[in-house]
Amino acid sequence: MRYRRSWFFSNALCGLPVLPAGLFLWKGSGIRLKLYDMHTHTNNSHDSKADIITQTKAQIAAGAAGFAVTDHCDVQFYERDHVFERIQNSVEDALAAQKRFSGQVEVLTGIEIGEGIWDEARAAKMCRAFDYDVVLSSVHAVRYPGLTAPFSTIDFGKLPRETLEQYIDQYYTDMIEMTEKLDFDVLPHITCLLRYVNRKYGRDIDFLTPYRDKVETVLKQIIERGIALEVNTAYANCARECLPSYDILSLYKEKGGKFVTIGSDAHVPENAARLLFDAAEMLRQCGFTGYYYYKNRKPIFIRF
Image (tube, rainbow, N blue to C red):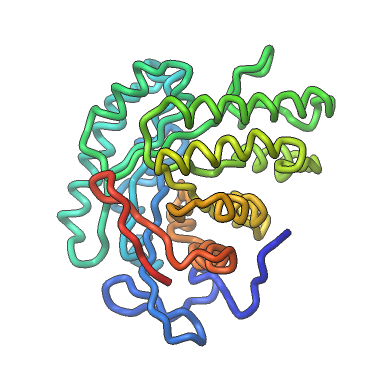
């Protein structure tokens, strides 16, 4: 099920009026909404070339009240990618940008830890390495025979359906372990794998119904631990639908989920704060009265 779009449009696409201090006017309602983009990347991530100044100016231009710099810490590539040094640079860059652009946008520090269950000690070390505002923990690769590699390197179009279904099952198994064991604040793009399987390779896979028990376990664990669920708009850039789907987000709300964030996952300045209004509208239609951003690893509520 897709959420109703009604009169609702993205600020990035339609140029909604920007008010002082990062406030947006919710079209036709008179409601002012602060937007915090809680998932972004800079050239301190292996897959981004955008420097912090460029990304900050893009967020200001998009009208964001604030954004978190959550550069990648993929534990399996810790040595190869000089991850500690990259994250140190990321935090220092974010703090410098906060000072330089004070009064225009709030720049928050963060990290996105990938595959933390592959090396729990290293993940814990990086989680404590710096004073972050927010810690994200993701699954970008799955431990599966012959396919233990980043999703971006796998040709899902060639996998037999049975293998693909087993792979997705393992994806959720890894996520269950991650949400049970690791210390973090936000679970981003719970159906990240969907970007590749369905969008890139055109497979038509239901990511909820066959795996509902495991999805519910993931949601139950993050609810019990007070971990937020992210609405990620990176997939919506192409598919006009956010991650997770309306159905999974509704299930989270039904189970008692409270903490939600929104993030563009922008790796380039063109995607800064992109489609965050769509994410907010999706949350509103699911029955949420607002969303959260994080500072000093504490959730702060913004009402719709």
